[in-house]
Structures are given as C-alpha cells and as structure tokens.
Image (tube, rainbow, N blue to C red):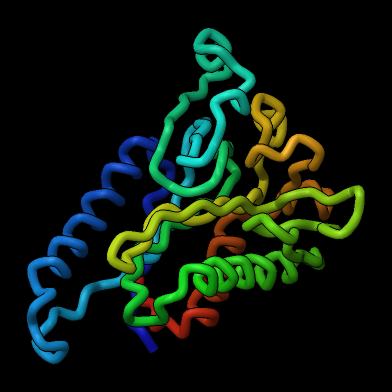
Length: 234
C-alpha cells in the first residue's frame, strides 16, 4: 500500500489550482534530478497527493487541442462568467464548473508502475466503479480517454473527461467527473474535439441531483482501491 495524502481544495480558481499543482510537481521533479546519481537506497521517498476540488466556470485547452473548438469570443466568455486557459496537459478542450468533481493526482508513478496508459486506465476504472454505485454502466470509447455511457451506440455520451501531464514519472492534472454539472456550458465548445457525441452527468442519467460529498468519498475510495493506496486525509 502506497501512502497518499488526500487533500480537498474545495471551490478554487483554476489558475490558483494550476499554480499549486505546478509548485508541487516542481518540488518533486527537482528532488529527483538532484538525487539522480544516488543509489536507490539513498533516494528520498516522495509524497503522493490525491487532490479533489471544484472550479468556477472555466474552459481549458490542452496541448494537442484546437482553438477552433472554443465557440465563444472574449465578450461571450465574460457574459457566461467563464474564463479560458491554454494549458500543458494532454487532450483538447473541456469545461470545468460547479457541480463537477475534479481530481488531480500528483503521484510518483515509480512507486506504483511506470506506465502512463495503465495509469489512465486505472483512473477510468475508478470512475466506472464510482458511477456504478448509482446504477450507471460506464465504459470506454476506443481511441479516446475518459468514461462514456453507451460508448458502442449512436447515443454515446461522455460523463468524465481526462487529461494528464507526466514529468519524470510525476503526474499532474487529472479527471473531471460530471456530477450535478450545468451541461449547458458544454454547448459553448466542441468537447474534447468530438463534435458528434453528447456530454452527460450522474444527475442527468438518474434524473435527480446527488449528494456531491457522497460521490467524492466514493471516487476517493475507488481510486485508492485501484492504486492500492493508503489514504491519509490532510
């Protein structure tokens, strides 16, 4: 079991959360670089963090994304009370906002496994198991990351987006699970660059809003199971 600190930032501005992630990542990467010539037994055991939060309305565009997938100009963004950032994760454009659960695992994968594809599949599995608690059957859509409903049908719809960055096997960014999300905000973008699929939420799928803290606790436990973490609440 790998000790992992669980931190809940609550509702936090996107830029502030991004800056804090970058600071944590830099500290860990700098430590690895400074100790790269040391024998394994002399190297520091880096801490691992699983951070949950929520953001005010914001659109973020990953390194491989196209600005054409943002359908708003600056005036429209202001009217929607939303902000926009080009960021350093993988993936295309997505939306974050109240009612959505965002998870930022900042993990030293060398303490788990050094396989970024496996890392993404584990995160997906944790989300699939989380929404199963609400009678929702999630799955994967071949060729894309994230969690989908009815992925093999014309009615395919995405319930969880993912985009990560990894440096020296330290991860940042993560996943966004639509819980009680205002899905109208997704109409202002081409979500993840996919223009022929819908976006959904737990609330939409089951017909009523759910307890956000309950979903948070379930997801935390499911991620801990997948990665065999010993969670310590901070």
